[in-house]
Structure formats: C-alpha cells, structure tokens
Image (cartoon, rainbow, N blue to C red; front, side, top):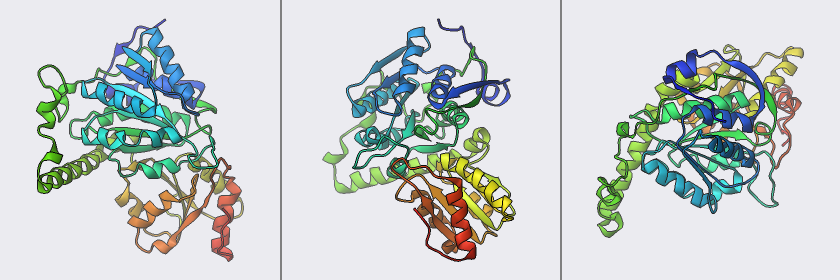
Length: 388
C-alpha cells in the first residue's frame, strides 16, 4: 500500500532531512528516488540492465505513487511518449541502456530543443558487435552534444541523489533542460550498497509547468501555436537562423545550470588531495577503482590525487583547469574503448600532453586498481606503453 506522503520543499528534502541507512541495489535506489520525486508518469521498455528499475517503478504505480505507467512498444516509442507527457505539463521518468539508447537517439535532442525537464536514467552497457550486456559507457560519448545535462554516478548513493536532484535542477525556469543520470550497468545497478535515504513519507512539490520558459500543450495552446509554420517550408536563412539561435539558447541554459549543480550536487567535480602533482581523473565506477588505486600507490610511497567528475554536461572546464594547474601527470581510466572522457579533458587543458588516455577496459572487463597504479608507475619510471 502507498504510504501517505507529505510535500516538503526541495531544500529540506535534499539538504536537511534526516537520512536512514539502507542496504539496496542501484536499481532499488532508482525506484526510491522516483518514490520521493512526486512523478506523474513513467513509461518503460525492458532492456538489460535497466529492466529491474522500471519493473520496481511499475510496482510504485500499482501502489499509487504515480498517476500513470505503461510499457511502450520500443525505446523510441517510450522516449516519444515521455516527450508528449512532458509537453503536456507532467513530471516524467524513464530509463534505458546501451542499444536502447541508440534506438531512441533521435528523441534526446528533441527533448532539449523543446526545453523539457525530463529525467532519464541510463544504465550503461556495451552496444557493439559482438553483443555484450556488460558494463561499458561508450553510449555516453554519443549523447554529449544532444543538449541534455549529464550526471555520472559512482555509487548507488550517487544514483539516488542525482535522480532526485535532477528534477530540482532541470525544472529551474532558467534551465528547463532534460537530465540524463548515468551509472555503469551491473557494477551499480545490481550491486547492493549502503544508501542513505530521506524518509519515504516525504516528497517533492509537484511540478509547476507555469514556470516553464515555453508554454505547455493544452486545449488553449495547441501545438501549432507554438511551433508556428514548419521551418522547412521557409527559406534556408529562416531555417538555419532559427535552429542556430535555439542551439545557442540550449547551451546557455546548460551553463545557467552550473550554480544549481553547485548547490545540490556540491559542485561539478570533487577533488581528493588537491596539492598532488599526479592526478587520476575519472567519472562513474572508475572513480571507485581509482580510490583503491590511490591506496596502492600510497603503500609504495607515491603521492597522488583524485578528481571525480560528477557533471559531464555542463563540463567543469574552469574547475578542472584550476584543480590540475600544478599537475605533472593526469591519468584518465575509463570503462569504454574510445576514451571519450580523456578527449574532453584534453580539449580544456593547456599542456595536454600531461593527460594519459587510459587505462581503458571495455566489453565487460573489470578495471583492477592495480592496472591504474601500474599506468602511473610506468609513466613515472619508464615504459610508456600502457596496457588496455
């Protein structure tokens, strides 16, 4: 049965309410976040490893926590349905993984282009042949320029917090963009971890579509009054000018989200041992492996620091430049073949020859902390070829 919930403001829910320790999986953490988020509607389609989370949200619907929930025909249909529900003024949630992300790809820039504060969880997995359902986050690189905000969870605690906080950040009138909350599949989704939860009888205030920068679709504001004339029927000048100006507005909205990310996520990045000359820079589960690598290095008398990147979009350019100003070596371990995070880092840092793209593992391989430590020792003591 549904527990009677009390509406509390976001500041209290996220920053002040007493929390109770639980021992749950990342998938359960997703459902716990949705339970407290006062979500109107969720649409699901099964794909490993996100299926369990949306199944649990279906149970929330059965208990009365959501107004509507159903299974879509496929991932593209899910994302289109969620888009429509958000255009109508609802607070919505969905999730996908790997090939599901790619099948739905067209909808993500549409969400951003229409300034909808949709929250979607991505439980990352392999996408290429030969098929793999194992942890890998290459799909994140394919979403970098869709216009959505992107947060990367290290743990189930991060996953819970980032989903709940994503609604508060996304729905700020000057932001109003979709948020993708990412976690490395299985490593987070199917592993039990200690997660501190605020009381389940609390929930966020309902979404107020009247604060949106664009009007919602209703009988008084039908779609054609918003979209106006089809741009493709006009001149090339009108088409490109409208598209370009809207792209610029989406980028500006993402930049305006920074102060809210600072407020609710405690910054776009986190720094351990800020005076170090050697840094490991990572996001997601690779951060946990990097914490262990620091312990290995410390035992061998090697001092190093760690930079955890929490927000991928907007990317913490100035924060990263400041944190690495005195670094001589920057190692970037990743759970993907392409090294997309290292490319992002190299693009914003001067003297980016300091940045080592790797070690990288993919296809479901584990990332032993010894491999990260080995990379650093090879760079310090010779033998520049790193193992992937």
